[in-house]
Length: 138
Image (tube, rainbow, N blue to C red; front, side, top):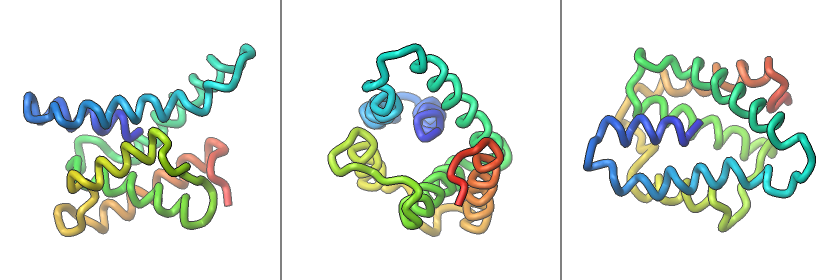
């Protein structure tokens, strides 16, 4: 999901988006990490399921209705919600941790740059939508 958002940001920035490419590559690596230890036929099935979940979550972001900053903040708040309640964990030094740190260092997720109420609502919508798909049920 973050990788898709980053791709949209890079596209919108044109040549100025080049510094974000390594972050996008780390996010791609983070997507592949959980599947790397699976050696049987489930690899493709799990990848397709993850793609469906991403599609569901992206719909909750209401692309076209909200700006990229609000969408990014919504994803960031969803990740914070899920880590704070122990639903997910981010391993220190993992590809996702490196990408997340890089995004924060570049100013992503700063408050006051978008409609924070909209970001909060999108984060809640994503969690509800993903729960309907069987993810992150608390």
